[in-house]
Length: 113
Length: 109
Image (cartoon, rainbow over all chains, first blue to last red; front, side, top):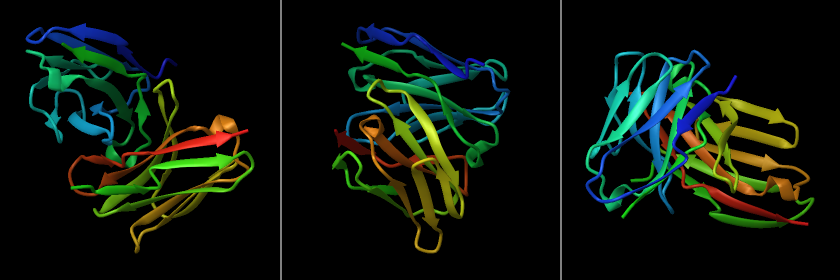
């Protein structure tokens, strides 16, 4: 069991470039999440997916899009990266929505110049 | 707005000391989570609880639903306990988790 995997681990972008962060889980979990973590702030929810084919906005969705490709995979796309999107991004999954234990990926450290 | 508040923000302890980290929240919850984030950045779940008390080894988590307060205790602290401890709550309305800003713990040998 790999748990939750994320790629890439590190990325540097120039303003205006686009990229997709990949996340996959092998625990057959229904719910998946994308968070960003910034210094001095708690983890903040970007987007959420309760099940395959459904996605919902979280606290800070502007500038991001997501795709729940299948039950295993949940990707996060930055269409036109901005310096304000410099952050550490974590993907997580739970078996039973917000009542379940969260399993986190190792994180992606993104720098936008 | 801070739905989850933790204290203290930073904590330094001598090896062997008893440690308490506090968490207060302002929303209705389905469950409260304690997470541990190591210097390398990885986040692991320590506890999920909705009432009472749970214990794993030297770690104990308690929650008082009426007072909207939880505590994480570490007995006989060890340098390997040095990490950031994060309190999070799953809201009972909508599909949202709220996170505290974390408590950075350093245990000195």
